[in-house]
Every structure is written in C-alpha cells, then in structure tokens.
Image (tube, rainbow, N blue to C red; front, side, top):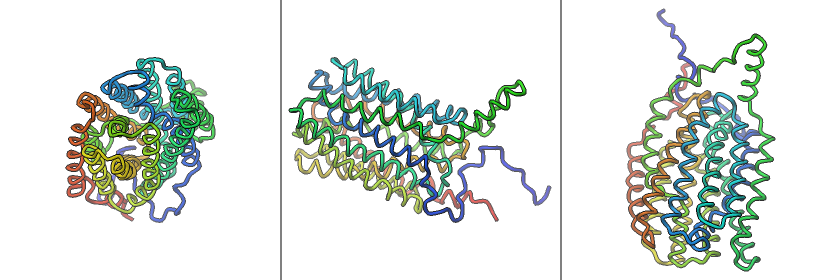
Length: 428
C-alpha cells in the first residue's frame, strides 16, 4: 500500500542502529567485566610463555626458525578454521558452553608445553591452545556485544582488549622475576603459567548468557508439545555486503601480518638477551594496553576505518624499523611504537565487524572476521618463516611497505565513508 513498507526479514536489516542517548556507562556490563578479568588471567598465562617460547623452541628444543613460524602458523590456522563454526554455533545454542570449553582447552595446552621435551609436543600443545582460542573467541566477543549499542562498542571492545593486554604486561613481568630468581631456567616458567590459566576457566561460571537461556526455554517448550526447538530465522540470513567487503580488505592485509613470535626472534638476533626480550615485550604490551580503550572510544566518534588506518601506519613503522635497525635501544623504542598498531586495530576491528551485523548475527560475524583474518596470519607466518634466513630483515621490510600502502588506502578511500550509524538510523 502507498505510504507503507514491509519490514525486512530478521537479521537482514544490516548494521544495528544506535540509540540516541545511551547512558555513558551503559557499555560497562557485568559480562564485559567478568570476561575482561577472565581474559586478563588467561593472557597472563599465555604471555608469560610467549616471549620465551621462540627461545624455548629454537634453543632448548633445537628447532630451526622455519619450524617456529610453522608451529605458530599452523596453531593459529586451527584456531582460525574453528572460529567461524564456533561463531555460528554460538548464535544458535548460546555462548557460555563454548567459552568455557575454549578456555579449558587453552589451559590444557599450556600444561602440555610445560611437559614438552621435543618440538612436536609443542606443536600439538599450541594447536590445542589455539583450537581453544578459536572456540571461545567469537562466542565471547558476541557475548560482549549483548546489551551494548553499536555506538559504544568501540569502548566495550577497547576496555576488554586493555584488560586482556594488561595480562600481557603482568605475565612477562612475572616470568622475568621468576627467570632471574630461578637462575635463568626456562621450564619452571612454563609450569607457573598453568596457574592463572586454571583460574580463568573457573571464573567463566560467573558469566550470564541470555541467548543460552532463550535456547533452553525454547527447547523445553518444544519438548512439552513433542516438537524440536525452532531455529531462529535471523541466524540463517546472509551477512550484509558492507561487512563482507570490510572483512575482505582486512583479510588481505593480514597476509603480511605474521605472528609476533618472529618479531621476538628478530630481537634475539639483534642482541637481546632472554631477560631483555621479556622486558621489551612487556613494554610493548604496556603501550598496547594503555591506548586500547582511548582508540576504541575514539572509533565510536570517528570512522573506525580511519583509526584502523592509523594502526596500520604504526605497523609499517614497526616492521620497517625492526627490519633495518641493529641497535637494541632503537629496536626497543620501535617495538613500543608498534604497540600502537595493536591498540588501534584489535578492539577497533572487532567493534567495526560487530557494527556491520545485526544482533542475531554477532557470533557468526565475529567468527568470520576472526577466522578469515586468522587464516591469513597463518599464511603470513609460513612465508615469513621460510624467508627468515637468520635475521628476518627481508620479510619485515616487505610486510612494512605493504602495510603502509594499506594504511594510505584506508585513510584516503575508507569503505565506510559515511557513518554506518547515520545511514541506518530509522526515520522518526
């Protein structure tokens, strides 16, 4: 009829509209707080291990750099493959069971690393750990968006990434103190890391999952009348075209974003000792943690693609700088500047992806975004590891130049030239 419009099918309405005047602290939900503490503890465990893992694999266990790149690449690849399936499952069955299983597997993986006497065991352990990350990542990030309007998700994801990354500060510092106290023994540090990993799993019990409650309720109602629980039609529709375009762009960039383990190996080749490597990695994470929330909050006010472009510019600076310098002092400064890349892209990227999908598709959106970009990082780890040849200068320079071109592209011709919230705000 003239003057009337039919409503769009569930889930096809594109990015969520923002509310006019959300409460300044509406984004700081209970789930966000609990999941932030969980991530803090898990990252404390992970990052206690991460700075010493390249040295543990290549020096203690005697594997070449190509094996290190392949281990990290394959492990991250497993997580990337799992992530889209976990995201889709989270939209249909709820987020909490997958989150708990994911953190549990990560803890088990760390236990296996502590027991490892040969690099294939580390490969299995890292694969289990990253499988757990793929299983929990998209359901957790989808749960973070519940109750948070699109216009405040930069703050929400920025806060979560800040808490997560403070674990990456505390973990290496605990490792450094223990490394010195234990007379430069590496293996005891691997056992210490198991403790916060176990604590993080226990805290998942405090999470409230409204989608899980809805699934249980529908299942009970269906059982009472002898039918299967209905499938939410909103979870079956395609994701919006703009979401797919943005994910494609970020995936192509990720082909030059190889695992940070290779950057730490570069520091070691420049002349960093184990203690210096751990401390440098901690200072990198201080920068990352300190600027994650401001970058996320700024992305709520400005174009997320522009903030992401700034992050890529810091990536370019970090890779080119580390590829050229032989000075330990300058490398330390460059690594800190590189921390701005993660601060401007990690949480911002997740907020960007979430704002381009409807509320019923958050798990799938996060799973596809994290899965595709993660798989590209796998490929980057493999080619960079094969081209490393001792110092790693060539792959660092290649990635740095390509990232600089991507930064310029996103700044000059961003895919979200018009604010998404403004485009999709319904007329009054």
